[in-house]
Length: 227
Image: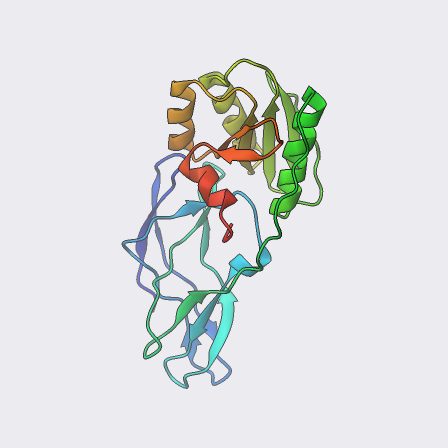
């Protein structure tokens, strides 16, 4: 039987107990990914096919197969990726499936507000989102973009994004059970950055070359080759 681990949501700080489901190996024995009680759950802001699987070795017959990566929905609307322990080859192996390398991002020079929106849309498409469109709800400032499971806000003004801007984006995303990401041309107020860290919102600054630059750890994680 799977041991339960405590999982804390980075968005609302709520803690839940989680037990990984078991799956039947071809030999008939139950297999399940070993959870890492010391690991930290991360918010899933976009889904990448290769990252949704882990390779688990059956302790009974030694066969290795890919099974769904443990995930947990928080009542606040955030989808959490539960950390999996990495065990050496002598035991049950639970390693992330290798992600497909990303090609280099090709930016578009920003001269107008429309260019800023285009740059953000191109970046999101580079991350794997193909159904990018205007968001149904217009944000208090800037321009909203949407894709399946994600809301993005692009602020092309010369005013740093405020605490209210970040909170409004997060609240809107939460009501739609989606992740969110913020792109700003002029950066962020100090309290806005702090609040984004608490809520798990990736923040990017758009430089004039059209390349989004990560501002916080959540953006670094989104921008990394592993996604």
